[in-house]
Image 1: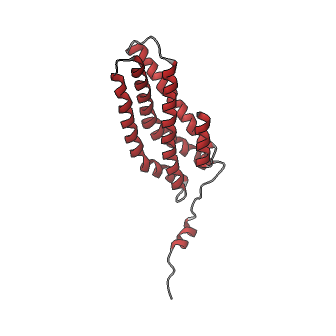
Image 2: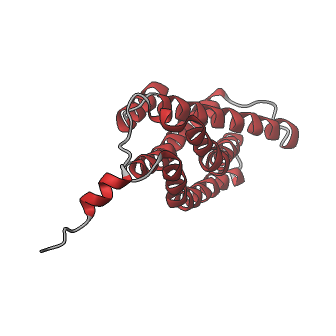
Image 3: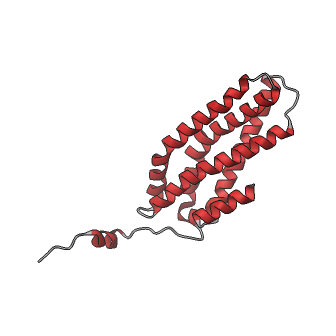
Length: 181
């Protein structure tokens, strides 16, 4: 699954650095959610263990959702890179998609959190794991970590391709309407 998602990101972004960093953020988000969930299960809810199938299903959901949010955010940033320099493009892309990603993440987390009201331990565990993972991914990874990585790596984020950066002098003269006469 990781390989397929990575390949999709490579093809979509026409880059290698960005997909590697994005996949690392998805895996980090899953690991954080798994660790936090385990601490809740063990020390708060007093569950003796976590089923391996819960970890697998949680992994599938969180990798798919994290990749989806990545694609949405990074595609917009790449589009913005066609019209402006890298740093303003990252900030514009984040501004344009941040509210949508945050809203979708909050709704999805609440949906999975509803499973914690079920009487079966498996439902409680999967609901908790995915809800926490979506919240971590939405509020920390997609809102802070991914834009920070894009800004820190600069234009090498898109290596080996380079999105077109408009030459302001040349582009403004092309878009001017010639004066008649």
